[in-house]
Length: 202
Ligand SMILES: [Zn+2]
Image (cartoon, rainbow, N blue to C red):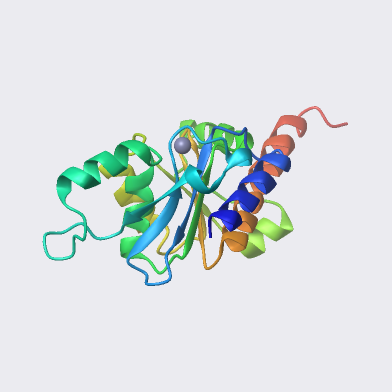
């Protein structure tokens, strides 16, 4: 499965959606109780077998299959956004998650939030049809607040934008998470370019 993660990592960087070190990718395991996620400081376009780590989804006393100490050590190695991925897997049926610091999505989340908005409504036809509305959520990197907000929002949306930070897309497959990410960035870009040009056109 790491090969698939590696492939999507190359694709997302190659498409210019994100710079190599700004994002993370995960996939739920076959059994459903764990997920494979990129390690911290892993360049998304250079993922090798040792660039991913398997993490448990449920860490309660009854469900834990690694002890708390071991889990803490594993979390140091895994992406700093691992708690966000874990909560989304625990609370939704997502099978793959892609988080990326896409530039237009980041800029539009700030502009929209400053204008008092809590979501971005796409103006391009694909975005209108496919995303309808993109929630803007808040919370610090790897925080419980962000984990909760992301899991809640992704129960009703294919993708969200973390304010001033980046996109989170959840899908049935990594390909789907990739397409949602590309659509989120495309819709943000079109809306940004339209807003930038409309007052000077003609
Ligand atoms: Zn991030």
